[in-house]
Image 1: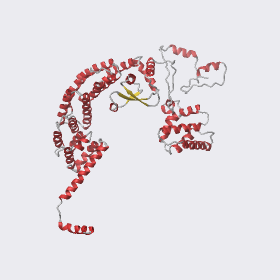
Image 2: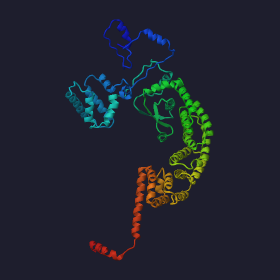
Image 3: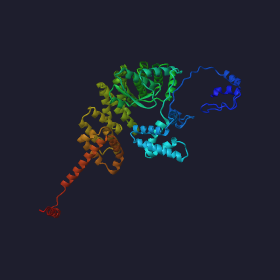
Image 4: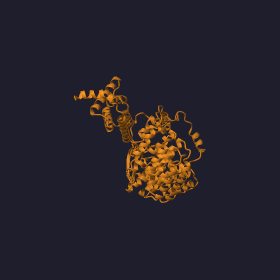
Length: 551
């Protein structure tokens, strides 16, 4: 019987009473005060309306490892025992073999048979009537995994614990937000699964566009059902494609209940949550991300709030790194907004202001930087150059190239930033090859400290190694600089050079090494050819060679 039936049975005279009450969270049945004491205590408390709901659970949440105090070690194993009454060991090993084969591991029928026999033999030696989980696991390790515990982790996660997700009756009470999500989930044919799966979306299709908007709205609510792949990977698939990794966790049901404070529908709640985040945001980069997310989620009201906040902060900020960090997400919004059928025209004015302010303040912000700050600026320069190239607006690129030209020619600017600025100008065709060679020769001259010259070279050569590989003049400048370094200077420059070349692809590094070897052999051959010829010393050698040849 359950705990609620306990008092009635006791009054009926029952002496031995067993109560099934799940985990023993409190000794509530040891001492039971009179009902009037409880009634008196409850009358003093304020009345609050409470709504309860059911949350589907997974086997993973029933284990000790999840932190569940009343958990068990192997819910998947007990599920197997409940479902399979005969030939338990053989059936279990069949599941293990199928799982290992699905992971491209060797697990034949012979392996399964031998593992069952070994498990049963172990059980007999231990005086047990049948093989249990311990014997089956040891037999799996000995026969199927070659003594390795690594494949056993897969067996433990997928079979011993299991990945089953429970269900809740449609008639069970739930919060309005959860009901709205359930309705949208069914209409969009999305499944709540405890295992991770990939979802490829074609945004030209109405159903996939709606799925994308729903998943982005859930992200605004903190319900991380799906995680979008990195934008750079998505763009290689086309501007109209997205890829998500979906995995439903029971904790997300709790997150839904908490998100219910923002509204009764997913769209209403996401818009209110975004508006709250906008009011609390103080970073331009964060506001740019919120604008991008609001447009992806098709929340025009939230996007309008972001625009107002962006105007306020942009007008007052003098933080050039923050301006640079905010530009890439806004540029993506402008470039790809029409693909998602969103109105991103209001972003243009903000982008124009950010570009102008960043270009004006950039030279002064890059003076007297330490290595850490220079690294951040260098990364931001590359991101902004890519973003402005994405937009393709000549007026923006002209302003940006002028600012980069100022950076590359200022001796007060950190070498990493100056070298990177010159490389970006070269890649954009905004500076001639001859000018690059001239500046490189000056920057890598012996008059500059080796550390500064090394940082400058890192900024110039970072990225693609094809520039160094196919430009003979640049190769010669860099080669002469490295060859002219003394032992102490070379030791100081080596970490910077290694970091630069490590970023190249393996094929580029092989080609650079092969060219260096060819030129080294050529120099050695030339040195031999230019050496003075001593006929007197060579005569015995020539005579011996002629004798060997029979001449």
